Length: 370
Image (cartoon, rainbow, N blue to C red; front, side):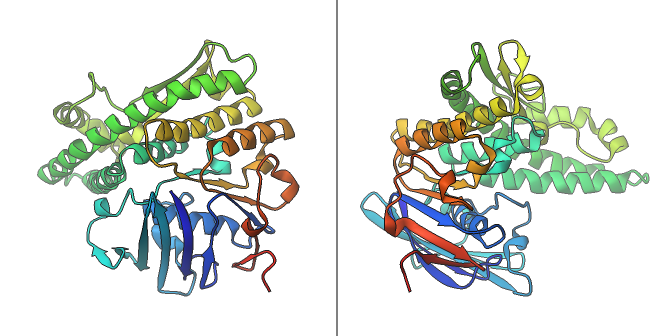
């Protein structure tokens, strides 16, 4: 799988343009604030209908504009497919080829990407929201429907929390709360199951990579930690029971305290928490191992290689860890897009002349073009 062409209009600071990409490594060079990350975000958005930077998709529409559009020509095996997403305020329109697609589940999975960002490198040290984001992006590669389930769950969660806050004044509409609790239980059980499966699949492979990349890392263990009491693989009825059981406490706090919104995963080095006791360099290499393991797991199961997006992660690593990262990523093959402010920060990747781009003021221009 690789992207042959991307067309952009009204997305962040990027100018309206068409960019042809090569199948192997594509290096995007430019100073900070010129649009390199925005370009990778546009590709990620085309694949997932989500941003890897913000929770509101409205933020990707250029300031002062009413619409944004991203389209891409994707080569899948021997069959090219054109994908297009148009945003107009909160409204979204999707196309696969010339056919309008009404529901996200019929669009997701056409393009698969794995993004490596500075936030991803901080996910071991950072808060659980970063780790939930990683779990969701991993689960999406194995099960594209997962992001639809996450969306449905988050919508029900926001509605239930709003009712809880309103109910603190003594006017709780319990029957309405129950309806959103049921919606949360149905979609939330699916979300937690998919996250659990993703952590088990990715974690096992990552443990092997971590032992190779991180010194003194014997006894590595990565485990899923659900935000509710999952018995076996959990059930809708059990999650619903726990939501009802916690209603009085939720009402006092004005928010839902149990459920997938509290999901997390734990990484231990020996008997110690990597989040609390590993060095910053070790934490970043653990994050890299997790990201690499996602790609390797997808490839090993016979899936098409996802497109790899590396957003300025080289600047977050020392020279030795940069070399390890790019050596391993280069060995995966497939299409890779790398952003950097300094070409010297990108070792070990063979970048052909026609895969070098200069990004300036929102314009992406192939080096050598007039």
